[in-house]
Length: 220
Ligand code: PRP
Image (cartoon, rainbow, N blue to C red; front, side):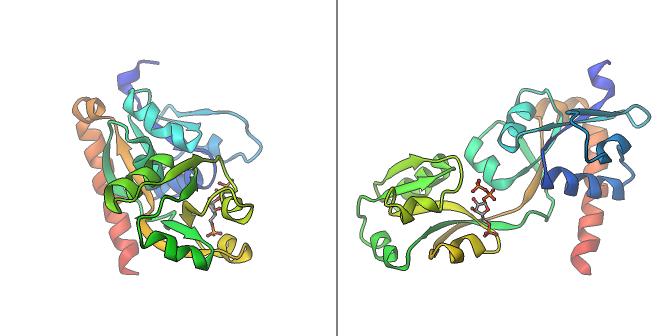
């Protein structure tokens, strides 16, 4: 399989990959074998259209794209900000909308006002560090967690968390709230800078067609 013949996409496993494929289908790029819900395969090829897809963990998508193992990737902006990889962002795909926020119990709002040294738990230590140190000029201790971050303030591990808020129900059901908003998030199409040179025509054509679909959707 000669690499330069194919356009390779790295997609985060799960909801983002499903949404990505739905969008690509609208511009005629398909991959039937990806639709089998029982499949454990990680690589899928459409020989006719010379495209291939692989499914990785979301945070690894920018890594595959930076090293050129994939030409393109679809990933949440949270991952782009946290991973800080050498990739270009081509398009905001509009789905997967949510917010990166500082959250905690209502009383913790006070702790964000006076540069107090507090403990911040997060799956996104770099985003948390950048926000508190560079933006708020507040020295904090950052504790990396791998999920269920809302537990942090409840069990006394941390004062606040930096996490994704989508519907807000996880916060509500655990007695927490949004204290400050850091950034809006959504899924983005990213590209390897060398692929952009070598396969520029194909990638630009795909981007223009995707953008037209997204602009149409916005009008609805
Ligand atoms: C994410 C995020 C919040 C939750 C927010 O967690 O970390 O916990 O979703 O969504 P909501 O505002 O709609 O409630 P995820 O489901 O990815 O699991 P995790 O806790 O294991 O990271």
